[in-house]
Length: 230
Image 1 (cartoon, rainbow, N blue to C red):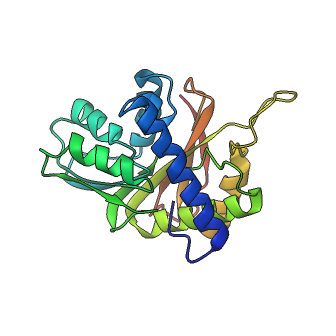
Image 2 (cartoon, rainbow, N blue to C red):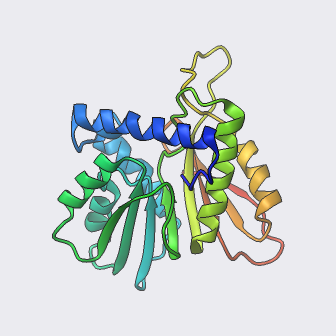
């Protein structure tokens, strides 16, 4: 997420999230379980949705906000071997960044930094699952942090950016209070109000209990949000 801007609630929230994922990494290592995923297939299915934003037919720069141990970099190597991608991952967990640097130390086209958001202007910015675990952060403070993060992604992305959220619980379904599960309409409305020049695509129905927002930064006038079932 983006910098807390000296907001005490945001600082506490980010510190708690950093510790949460550091403990996951220590327990499970640089594996999907180390970033709260049950298996690699599910993890990669999410990455595939985020990457639908990107056109790699020419050299591109890419920010990976909340990069963890660099799993997205691995998928890029598998699915886009011929693409020229200047990749930079950032994460609030120092342990995650250290693990990513060890894993990718032999590649000259990627770098990792400890940061709460993107640290440079790039063609695309992706953020996988960074909003899902709010722990005990009050909802208003968490949503204020999400809103600042979306604005930060917009500022650091020339062509577009993408994020995802867990779907709301079904009626009568219990949901752990530490999870953040907003309806799509909440952030679609927010983006329409605060980023009116962007074209937003909603992806859902792709086999995971979540949805993805693809935001093209320079849409033609009059563009509107459109849902896609995939």
